[in-house]
Length: 517
Ligand code: GLC
Ligand code: CA
Image 1: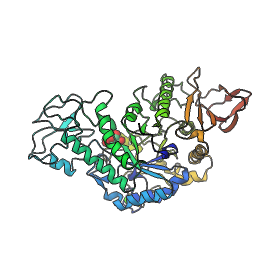
Image 2 (image 1 turned 180 degrees about the vertical axis):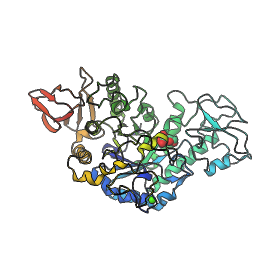
Image 3 (image 1 turned 90 degrees about the vertical axis):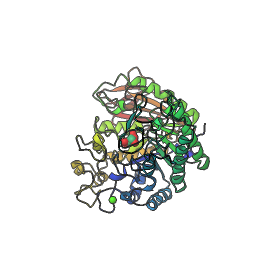
Image 4 (image 1 turned 60 degrees about the horizontal axis):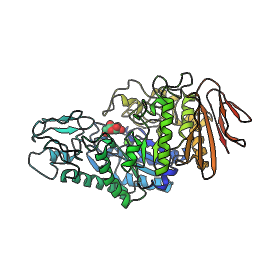
């Protein structure tokens, strides 16, 4: 297995939802020049990598995850030249930019799809997954038909406006099905690899790959068919661009790593109820002080330990996150003090951490905000970035931004948090700079969770190049005691109240301590 590029060892990602970040031309929609304008802000916080949600030409029925042209920037975000300049400006600052790659489907407006819908055979006839006549797909798959002249149903992936690109079926069971090795799927793979090559050769540093586990249909439960397809694409690109980074939306790091990915998100892992979500969401978020930890907390950290060991062995990563454009914000079920301890965990544990724009200032999920561009309930996490307390929070000069600005902008915004040394913004910036000062906190540094009698406090050791740290976090309203494994350990950072007596550390409610030895 190829080791992940060196730069991932220190990468700290900031996710930008481009339409809501910063608008520079007053049309009420964020744009690429806006991202460029805010690079110094992002860098100033300590981030050195950016994940940009889709920026491609699209009719925006699913916020750009319905791509009409994979090689063209959507006019509302700017031009391809703006994207190239963004890569350049980021590189000048020692930062990396990864794009969102949507391999599984296109928009119904994509020229490939229009040609695929034609009754007469052509180059794109097999570009999508079609049945004969109005045939049915295997159970669990959806399809659409009726608005084109071709006989057949076409499979869709997420929304019905997202027809599935043809990467083949794992096993041919019906005569309309093709395996991944046949010419149709191979030409999809060829053209999609070419999309990756296009952006890499213009300066992108890698990709976050959408619905990565779902390419091959009727795949084995462990996605062997999909793994093979990814290897074909990723190996080709890594052969040409060894520094390219591939991050998957897979929700299963072992499978993702086996498919050639460097990083997989910790989101809804199936190996424990709600995965990473159990830490910050639901009825018993682990980081809620008042509530007892969910029953799943112990098995979660147990499984995470095994996964971390495997990641260390093969030089790959999982990615702990604050949230993303699909889920409620981190502040939805836990309060600011609790968020602070979660951030302490995020930035002292192993892996490549991702922070969703606005989480650094505590932006909130807007319950009930009407949907737009296929957002549905996700709208609440996609509102404009709150830069200051002016009418549109400094996001745009337009008085009708495409999503309304959250009225809580007067209290929650960058400008006012800059002035307050106790703000979340200062807290996050301090944490990031602390992480960078300690090799034992590098993304690849080893982690050993120290089992506790109870699920809280959370205690783990990190180690790299001779530096050893013990991190003890107490996300609870009860005092907790922790045994210090070594006698000459010194406290190098703390939050909240604690006492250290010989080999015993007493953590007061809502505190954390980091010891070095
Ligand atoms: C992923 C994206 C989501 C999108 C879907 C379909 O889950 O994160 O926003 O709607 O895939 O592409
Ligand atoms: Ca704009």
